[in-house]
Image (tube, rainbow, N blue to C red):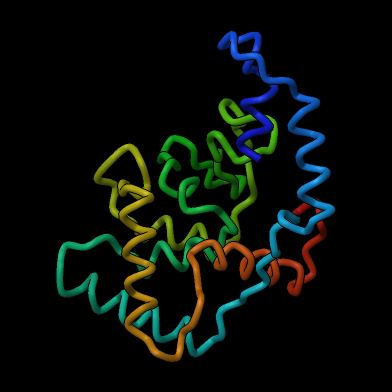
Length: 188
């Protein structure tokens, strides 16, 4: 995937004589030989017991120290279906409480990396979580995505009964729940 991008600009941008047709030919061969293929889709949804264990421990850790309120971030991820990086970018100014919307800045898009700012609907639960957060910064969750991702991974590792659960699986859970509640595809 990364080589495709390089091959498309190598000659014009860097004066490296790479031809896009060569990478296309190589990829066809690699697919035929089954060396490369499409990535496996994850469909991991956390079980209620797993979420309960994670939330209890995250809450206890937050109460004992000045750590990030990971329990609220986990709950917000499930209530909003936002990616961790998107959650960390949300600013208080991006919140439209009356219309139950939030501006997600630079929302992930296959062809547009920057400037893809989109207003998205928030559930009542997501709004309640936001309102429980003290305003100490311009951002609602003033933490680093990498640090929280690591904290989540370490939290999961505390439990032998929880296997192969990633923070991004919470997004899948949120989207699945929205459809189960009868939301339309457009609303989700």
